[in-house]
Image (cartoon, rainbow, N blue to C red; front, side):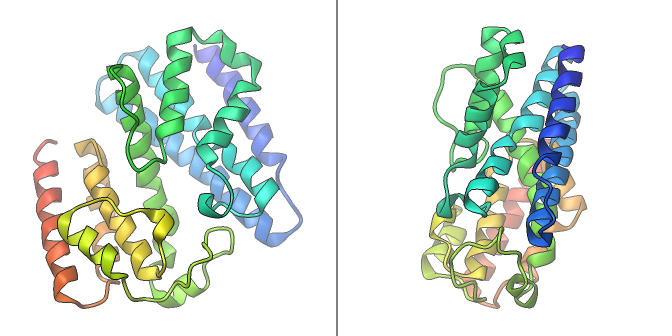
Length: 262
């Protein structure tokens, strides 16, 4: 599979560069996604190795990481945004691109199904139910690898002043003020996943990022998140409110328990 992976990397590099633009805003967005693709691919490989998966499965995880966001480039070329709510599901777009690529037919049918399932579910609120444990495993790997790097990507926009300068291709059409919507506060306190499509404020956006912590599947990923200070940086930029503080206490207890699995 290594030779196939080499061809896939070469194709992906050419494909991403084909979207380069003289428009500074467009170019910035494409470069962010190109860099993100590299980090997520590396995260998938490192996590798969941590899980002591066989070489074949490490390479399968690498393919999933490499192509998980391939739909983003077509999304931006059509809609001029990376916001799914304002365009269409980028995972669905990724599958359309993948179905057009002949080298995916070189994978056996089971591996191909795993790749498509993992990519289809990498950005969903929950993984679709299936009795196939391997599909679930690889979906969890890409979801962790993706979230880990999204924390890096969005970190510069935590403060309200920075959020105001957030690029248009990241913003939604929401009014990104600092307060948190009441329903998002309740989600945070109860530990329920918030619906990112209902984001109305910059505070809501921060809560969604924190709620991702409850969806981290592996202690390896949680350790990386904690080491890089992503949780505390978001918490430091939340409004001072007792209900929010209650949610923070619950979150920290969950993190501590997850780290014990390391």
